[in-house]
Image (cartoon, rainbow, N blue to C red; front, top):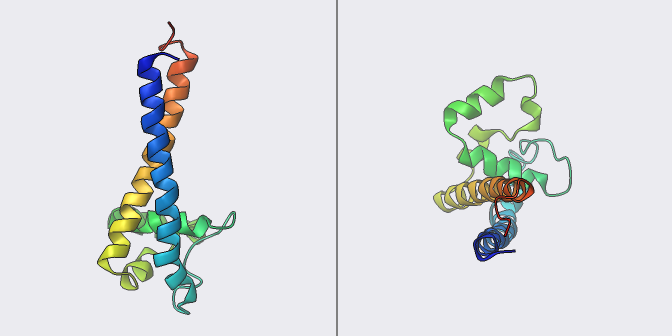
Length: 126
């Protein structure tokens, strides 16, 4: 590994660590509250694996309203969290935390795949 690759990898790992911390905080502060609320309990989307509803809720808070409306009208709408109910039952801190968590998660995953691809094609070869 050369210096550039090491630096990018370290930055990526820092982003992933921060994502993991925000995942736990967002799950404990926001999604736990929504799970306990009878109105929103069944509106958190399909849970593929334990904790996936945390990502569904963050996505509902991070996407623009127009995108959420499109997803809400699709035949697969049961897979996504109901953004209208989620927005109605969250405060500003929950929304900001969800937005930051979701986009940090997506950007970390994207840059991880990008770094793997660049390494595969020998961009960082010595």
